[in-house]
Length: 211
Image 1 (tube, rainbow, N blue to C red):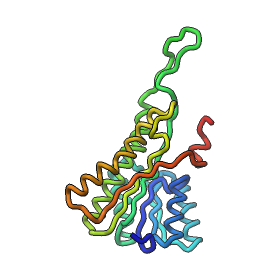
Image 2: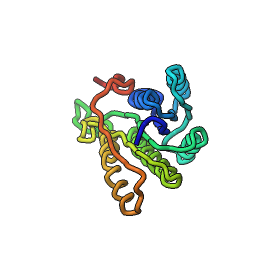
Image 3: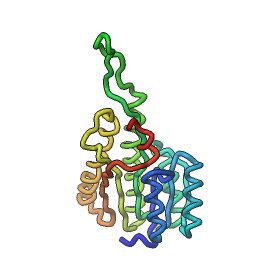
Image 4: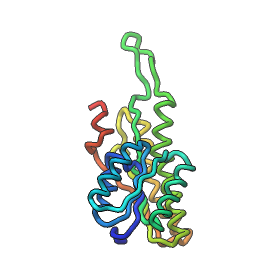
């Protein structure tokens, strides 16, 4: 597939790896849909891509919402007529160990709550699933050549203090294998699915972590 002339949807496109991916596609001739939660980040990236001569729209959306996923898929098709690439870069961290002990008693003083577990699973795993699922649906129904990309992480091998994040990312790494198998079983030949697992990257999210 040629990037030039393709339509690329990038979630988490308002900063970090997603921003870099969106700008790379635009620089190489793709029409880009920047999806993010933060409107100010969308506006900045869209402006910078436009000033560099790229074709782009921005859509504010929460990737954990089926309605929002449908919204940015629809927006891409309405603006550019098709979808060829979908990269799921949206992700968050809520770091912490599963248990913390009181220094004096040695007893458990704190445990990871669902307030740290669930948002990470919802955004990093469910958000990826919904993006891949709905982009694939559009590609299959449209008959367009397609590429689906999940963003895993080097932390898929397991990182202390990131049980939630690593659990989601190992699933993101496995997802393409199963999806491709299902595509072959169903006779879907126009869509590919791959996973990429970057190492530590100087994104705003990572530089804000406990170093």
